[in-house]
Image 1 (cartoon, rainbow, N blue to C red):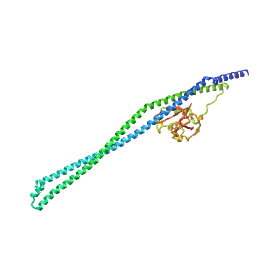
Image 2 (image 1 turned 135 degrees about the horizontal axis):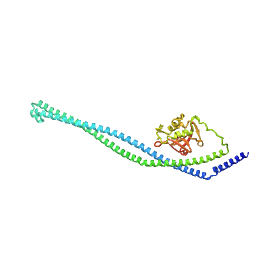
Image 3 (image 1 turned 30 degrees about the vertical axis):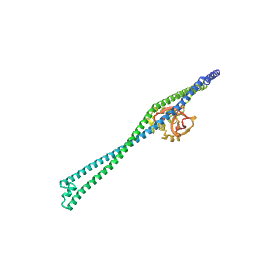
Image 4 (image 1 turned 60 degrees about the vertical axis):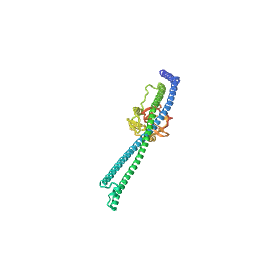
Length: 377
């Protein structure tokens, strides 16, 4: 009886001693407040840095679109210039052939006149002097006039065609000059756009560095908070253990479905650093919904492919009841849910953010478009 009383007194003493350390130790409260302040600062910096990085990324995407449009316009202008040059060459060939035809007809005319000269029909005067009568005179004059008139018509017609073709060629030359000027202008614009994009690169790197720094600050503070809370929890456990039998024990709860939330989170964490690929569903590249689908498929759980359908799958979970492995959803440009990640505990989540980024762990922010959570286990 005395031994039992002595044990009770000792147990009570241990309880009071531990209870005093657990609930009357001001250093833990100070550490917790300090860590919480640091975490809040990190979250504020993270939000600012993420907005800055997002704005820069949007600007680069806008520049990329303008660059692509400029390149397409240059390709179109190159095609038009090539077609115009081909038309110009055709016109040049036609002009050359016209000149050759004119030369041929002139030679024919000269040969005819030469033959007429040799035969005594050199001029109207010869026709008068050498004619054997009025009828012969008229015949000779008509022959000369017919040859000269025919030749004039041919030469005139050929010259008209040549001039017409030359006008078309001149128009084509003018069109080509305009097209070349437009191409030069577009190339100048394209050079300026590429320069602007190049100027954004160090700014993006700086913004990403700020995001990483803020994430590390928040993660560090969150780790401190978790460590402090664990100390408090350990004290509570020790307090409870002091007033129960040392031989009292228990077994760990059964794991539903052959897996635990810790196993899911551990498996998901091994994909940190995998690059974001739109439409990606494998370790060679993930998008946000493809990543969580792949992780759960490893444990034999089939969930929909896209975030909108995933948001309607499983059981809704309140923010206050989040557990590791729950899917957390965010609005996308005011519409949602357009983005999904996996809560891993301690105020953190793991996700595949966006193009240019990789799978990573970051603090879960309820102020950045958060729109709900689902439990799919």
